[in-house]
Image 1: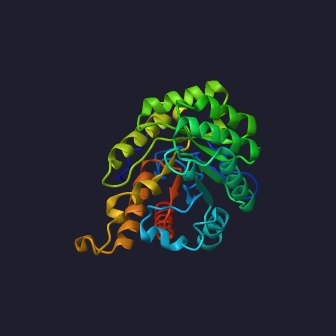
Image 2: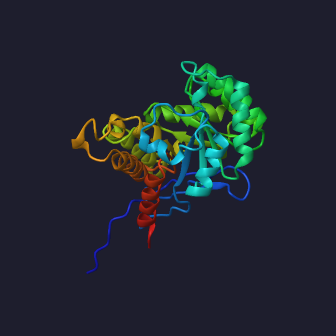
Image 3: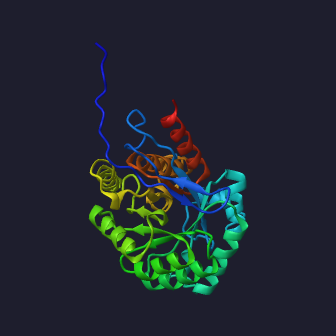
Length: 315
């Protein structure tokens, strides 16, 4: 008698969302089963990776992370183009770190001009992330949304403290929003409901559950993402049936394990390999939890994750 693997019955499906415009637009979502459970359902669109670009030279990056981009960190446009041409980036994530009120505190007009220049220079989808300061992000994203009208940028984080203002700008100027909640399934669902009530359509929303790297609470992030997928796929919870985006690069490369040099602690081994593996392994864990879009930093870590996606989906 042949053995049959017990299969889960799915009653829900993740919504398909198109990010960006034109020929290089990316569609994510559409899963009808748990991540990579291809024996039970479908993953019509494989997870995508966005490469990081900063709007100002990063000052606290580990040497290994900075090395591939050392010649372009002063020019976000050149940086974005290098990611696309040299490393095959499918998406770009522009981090508006310079707008942080506790840092350079650059104004909305200057930030919007940088976003506009990058968006006009590339043909792949552009994610634009602020600093999670509600007042500053509201000011910046209102201007960014206006000057990039119709480009379908992906703007975030949009949180409960600023969703009305940023959400309204996204609706008016035709952009997608990243609904960000602090590692809590109920708060994530509530924010999606609020954005829906505001008028953000289901095809213009992706979720950011807030994640962390290996050694810094990734098991909790995994558990929350897992529960989101369970509710979306087996409990018909349409308020959680959205693609998930994970900003894992920042979380892994800020860890001391990625920054400490071999000279400081010889027992930890090669710092470059350590940082690359920490990012790649953390990203892989989040893929298994349900990530549809990964924001990553090091080209070699990205290569490893792409290989893992290919392995997991090989027939």
